[in-house]
Length: 353
Ligand SMILES: Cc1cc2nc3c(=O)[nH]c(=O)nc-3n(C[C@H](O)[C@H](O)[C@H](O)COP(=O)(O)O)c2cc1C
Image 1 (tube, protein in one colour):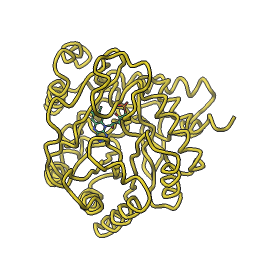
Image 2 (cartoon, helix red, strand yellow):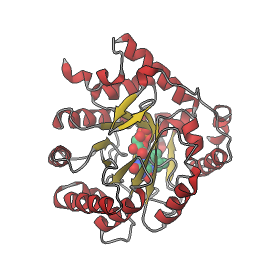
Image 3 (cartoon, helix red, strand yellow):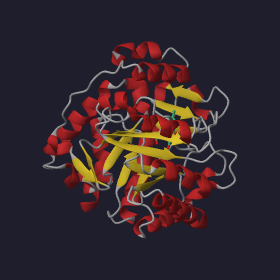
Image 4 (cartoon, protein in one colour):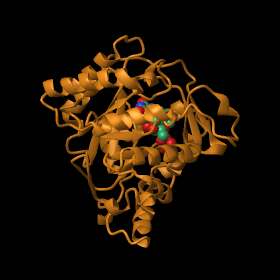
């Protein structure tokens, strides 16, 4: 059904279209994907089992309202959030812009969130149980006005570590002032330490903890993050968030809107940064490749560049959910074409000559 109504949704302002999509999904208007995935796509990562490596990136279901439905679209994992400790409205509208000609989006939503208590209550009410056949991640943020970032992340971790299969600290949204400064040095270590302590207090020290980074990081900051991962402070990295840069050749008149750019033009930059993190972490740290994936070939390129798993979001705004099945089917064909019996064998293949 969604593939049929996509052209109409695209006539609406983007945030209205998104709200309608969430409502329809929450009411059960979800196309059901094939129940089983090609066995070559199954993988173990972060101590978890994934039926397939294609995930829904954070930001689509910020408040975990439609988990059952989005899993039925065929994703191997879904990341809900970003969730902030207290509810907040985010930036004034309009704050989401389609760059149609570029297959891209610019957003400056600024963490609109119902807050952790409501989202946690929704998860506890069992909405996810029985409806979520895949891996569930929860992506955590800080409130805009909060002066103690580490305390905010720790608060989220305490609540969600027992409810999620993995947690993500989002220190890379460009739309919360100062947030990206938390990716470096002492600030990062303080956050990671406090978050780990909060997870232990919640008897969930074993829940994998990931860090989501920006594709715009300087070299020294990338090395600092890679070192933190190699020291065991984080279990994996998501590479990465939207970019503040504006790659050459953008055709849409909206290209100079303030905010983070996602979608097709983000693919080269985010894949380069992914490959760089794979080298810096010597292939020892699970990486989730995110940014501009629009096909099975794109997903495969991220895996060869070093991703153990991939995520997407923006392409859904243009292509509709039928794409998830096509990406998985094409990925399985590409793995076999190159002689890989299992997904794991292809991870980082580009670095092995
Ligand atoms: C409208 C929109 C909202 C987003 N919100 C979040 C968010 O709340 N937290 C987060 O970590 N990333 C958020 N993202 C970033 C995506 O998770 C993803 O990292 C990025 O869009 C790159 O992937 P894509 O090119 O496939 O969209 C958002 C992206 C978009 C387009």
